[in-house]
Length: 465
Ligand code: C2O
Ligand code: CU
Ligand code: CU
Image 1 (cartoon, rainbow, N blue to C red):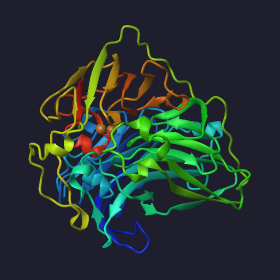
Image 2: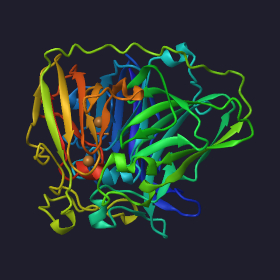
Image 3: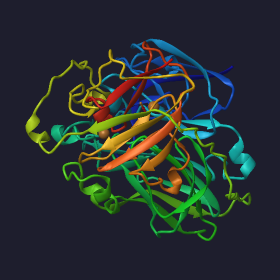
Image 4: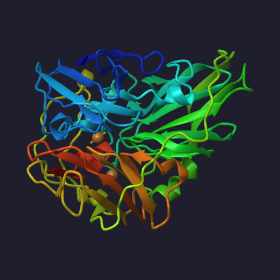
């Protein structure tokens, strides 16, 4: 049994040069340690909550039973401890963990509670992919924040606009603004995690060179997919390999070319801020001398088994975001969010409003929306005929993206995933098999990963029996 322990705590961090910001973290002031969990080994993770408000910790992408999933039904009270025990039997992948507290996921993640969780099956080493942590295998957690001149984090400080999704105007990688990393002049693997509450990024390199996508959310692709730009919605991950062999002594910029995708993402200008309409820098790569142990990217990476979907039931899930009349809607029914505040008095905003829905229903902790059978295969169809894009996430499974508006998805989406961006005007079908149990006391969630949508109704629950 491998043991890990995580403790939430409050502290102060330098997110931006010259500012001290009150933040929350796991085992530190901000974010959390990278947990590397070997495939197939039983683990015990003890989570202690040293903060003054209750929270949960969810293992996003981990295929574990409902009672170990850390959803909103498993709160950890202030001062209390919760023991998670599970064995991950799933391919090597870049997952993550974050709170999943009723009404509070967005605020608590924004305050700093999030970390990477790697499933390690050793296949990346066998294939010769870059795998030297911190040298040619780099974690890149991308988040945006709004910060006051005092250093204080601002959350939901522009109330009506931020209800569309909390976006910041400062861009952090691994908790730091204007980030840079020294990397060797060879192939380098970046593990991209869009850990932002609401913003999508269209990742690209400043000289527009192609790079290889080798993994999607839940594991390696069948073969590398070359592209010059990669769109990731909140909650999504991808592993990319960039060839820097000829770049020693130069600097390269990982950017987001957001302006190129804004109009294909959604049609609501209410949802765009200035950053969504332009290109901006995310991470500077300073290319230094090679380490000598240069890695490769083989043509075959993994076998992705096709799901036996003939005759599988199709569940249709329609997405409702705020319409054009949102600004006139005013406050909806507030279902009683707790009054606590965030680090340094950060506002927790308002949550629990009925603003976003799935199948025209608002999240209700006491209602089971879908029931699946253990071992069965299903197709879920997300239908978005509204103005905004919604990154839809399903707990307890990895799925395959079957189609976008009837067409096959791009090459980098033809692997295992747990979150898929459903753009305006799109119908996206995903297929999956349910391999873990979740009862009505600890059901799985499915929801939009724009955390302010999740907190305001855009979530449902399902059991697997
Ligand atoms: Cu990243 Cu329901 O969670
Ligand atoms: Cu999740
Ligand atoms: Cu949404």
